[in-house]
Amino acid sequence: MTTMVRRTTLLVRDMDASLAFYRDVLGLDVYYDNEIPLTGELLPAGDKGDVTRLVIVRGEDPVIGMIGLLQWIDPVKPAPPVDHTVGYGNPIFVLAVDDAAATHDRAKAHDCTIRAPLSETEYPGADGGVVRVRSVGLFDPDGHFFECNQRLEG
Image (cartoon, rainbow, N blue to C red; front, side, top):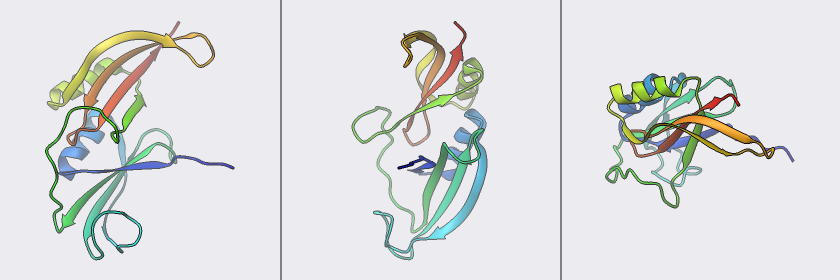
């Protein structure tokens, strides 16, 4: 059996704020942007006829690791307050970045909530060796947590 995770879709409150984060802070490119009326059959949220806006952003790979951003636009779906914690039911996204310091600087410039400032750490690798990374941990405008890692040599 072959399974490939192509995309994770997140519900967002404000598409413009989300795009600023995913495009300008994380450096992802917009792959798809369209309004989609719901059929009421597949997605376990919303009702038949609701109109959503789906934007899909992607990194370097053209197929895997995409992130969908879904906003209800008609009717507007009320959202709970943003919670900057990680708990059950909350994903933790881990991204490989070329320059964690630059990601940190862009996050500061965009007034992002930074949970873990720029730091370096080591942890056991899958092959029994040691992995060294420079990382920054931050939240998107909707409270989704991102660990951005730059792998360091030796």
